[in-house]
Length: 265
Image 1 (cartoon, rainbow, N blue to C red):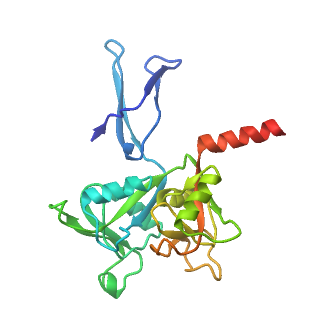
Image 2 (cartoon, rainbow, N blue to C red):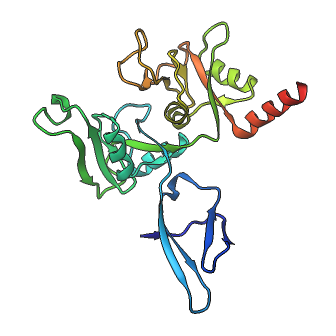
Image 3 (cartoon, rainbow, N blue to C red):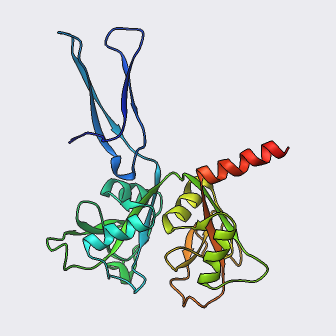
């Protein structure tokens, strides 16, 4: 299927007849797909197509109330709230090949419900089945069926960092601490992107914007949870519990700080 991007496209003529460059700006997460470019030049019209794939990370997400609470529309909204979009099957399959192993079924962008298994086991379809991406098929009642969701987050437009004042904080205090630091509490998609694309590695658990507590590990080690790299979760503890916090600063905020520092120097 050919897609048409709604964002700015600029055709820049090059040195040879029929050559051109297609420039696409302000891409969104759901702009992955095949695009067709046509150069009109009298009788010498030419066209070609290219597949655009955004680099990013697929992550499983559940409702704060527990597993299997999300309709398809609820799943879409949940991903958007975490600075991400519904993952496609291609994205989930690639993540499975890279080692994503998750037992709970989740929505994908095409309305199917699937889950990736690299280590077959009894609670996840049984040991007798081969590893793979297992499918419940397309759910015809997108409003009635409830599952988790697989979201896709691409490159960050800012920076995620761990913030811990002298004492750990409840959720309200964590939100205030990020604001005082010129930032906001990071979203789940932002933390996953920082872990996958920026190599963020921190053993301390911290609040995120959805009320969950998580921490990113790229180099597993003693006293830092499971032996696999990943974003590890403590779920959704009561908001009065005390933790650090992961804050997110947008690119404009980071750039302003760097410019100020250069002026001071």
